Length: 294
Image (tube, rainbow, N blue to C red; front, side):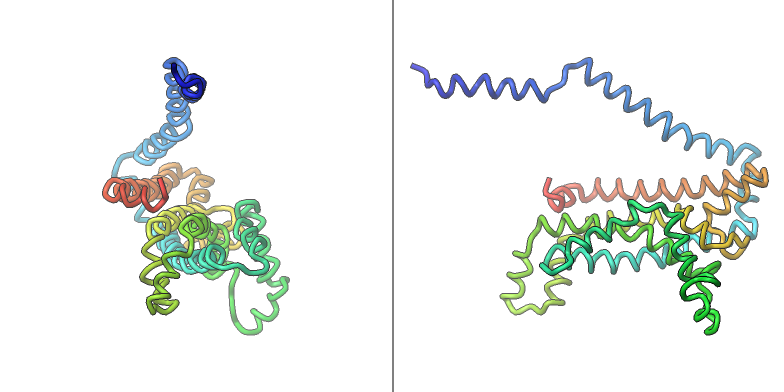
């Protein structure tokens, strides 16, 4: 006689399988909707950007990119990203290590603060810096007396960019470190390693892929940031305009080829980031999956 428990279990298992397995028409419909959405809202705009950039030929495209103001915007964008990403790397690692590995008062509040740039408009964050460092701001008089310029200069642009990008590294690392726990570090410390050695040889290798993902996201956002930078830059042509701001200026001047040429360069940098991420996943896919616990 068959076991009644097995009889009652098998239909339950089959019903659960049926509940999570969509029918063929549903899968096809979902796939088509996804592809249409990606085509209309992602691929089509990207194609239009490159089409308009080369509308007057390759010569006009490279002539637009060789313009002095455009080259200045490119240099400034790369400089701001080169400063912001390492700063966020240090902050993200420190914050994630503290939150994931230690218990202390105010931990929940610190985690909330890290999420603040996700909930505050970049324009508002730029205005906050104006209220702090502007001529009529809280620190404006002191900065002017000491000959220090924050707003309408590189420091203000860097500060605004760091603010809007600092959650990316930390938010990528915090859940990863929490999932890994403290076992490896405790084992290293019990074998005589110092705290710094445990971090450098144990913690950091364990989170290297999450760290890289966070840096890629941070870099992409830093190069494409518009709102906060627009408020603090002053829009000084050739001095404080980043690439997104320069695109706006060129477009408002009806220089469509120049605007789309710079926009295509930004899109190209984003595509390079995406290709680099994909190549890393192809080359180190197994390690990435193991790191993320998949």
